[in-house]
Image (cartoon, rainbow, N blue to C red; front, top):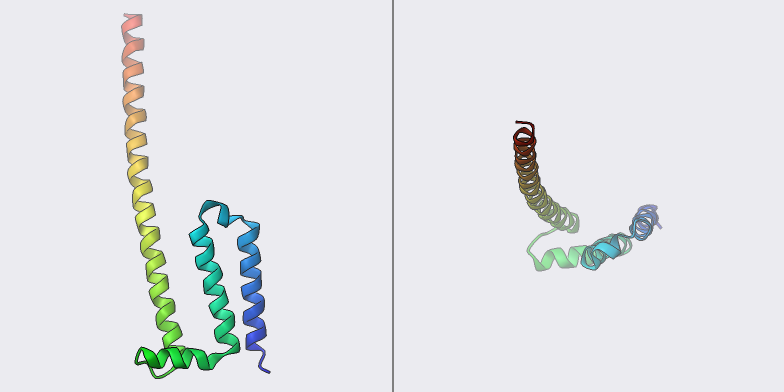
Length: 117
């Protein structure tokens, strides 16, 4: 038996335990299940590499590793896109908050000037 399946299983187990430790599932069960599924696929493809070849052939790709790399790149692009959307939304919210604080400070400064004068 090769050492790769054992290492992949240990990494997957550590990742799943870490997900449980940080209690990510309380925030979003779908995101938690997504990562559990990803790590289970890592373990399955580590122990049964022929499965990745069979799935790759369905999509017209000759090698299983090429298929796995393509899927990984697609998933990474999707995650980067989601992060971009979240960062953009946070930036808009931060701009709104800063604008509101600035307006409130200006209004309170005008009130203080009116009381003194």
